[in-house]
Image 1 (cartoon, rainbow, N blue to C red):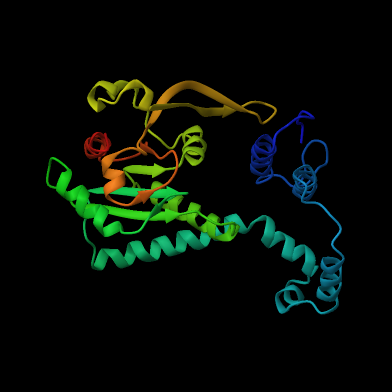
Image 2: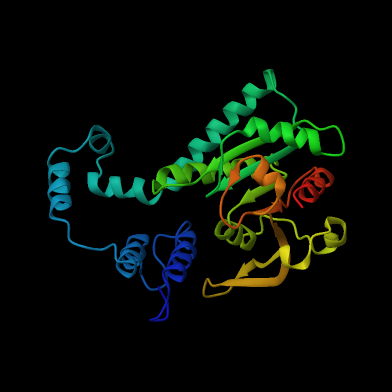
Amino acid sequence: MQLSPDATSDEISKRYGILTRKFRSIEKDENGYTIEDITRAYNLLMGFTYKDEKEELRQKKLRENPPFIARVLKKDPVKLENFFHYYKIYIIASLAAVIFIFFMIRSCVNQVRYDFNLVIFGEVYADDWQKIEASIKEQMPDPITPGVQVLPSYGSDPQFQYATQMKLMALVTAKEIDVMITNESLFKTYSEQGMYMPLDDIVDILGYSGDRYVRNAAIIEESDDEEPVMGLEKIYGVTISDSEFIKENGIIGENLIAAVVVNTERKDKAIEFIKLLK
């Protein structure tokens, strides 16, 4: 894993993410390691590796009576199962893309044309998205037809979290998000990945006090040893937990941050909404 002996769990997870991206295009690296080797190392460092006699018995029975797909493909059923485990994020991404395309096609028939879209994502609770839409429509300075989506990621179900993240990525790719409200840790992750528009040039327009702006550095490239290279620190969001808009509309979460998505095609409306949260 090429980590220092005192690496934290966050550093281990970040390094594992970098290495798994590397193995998308190769089966073995220069040291002869495979994705299975890297995953075993990750599990060991995170304390996930242990001998499970029940699991070994289950795998033995699975090999003795392989499922239909394993017989058709003539593959070891355990290895096939592992394949779906390691690459489930891509499988879920593909399913999410199919679902997204389906809804896009369906929406062409009968679609409300939103001219501003807000996504509330992460460890955030909002009980009435329609109330939020009505509040945005009422308080924005110009006539607007807002859309609001709430994508919570509470709980420990990784498949649900992956599906939520894939839906978010599909919406971003389709330029269907103008502003995102999320919790601090997810804001940090996505700002590092370049999802948000820098706000440094419009702080005078926004009018927030200096302590409400949230700064971070985005990853601009990876070094030869696959380590992220960070760019200059910039303002990517504003803290809004104490905003009257947030309180009045039942949006609940710790250290909430609002940010403008970098590929928005409605920048002026996004800025007006950020000002509204002040």
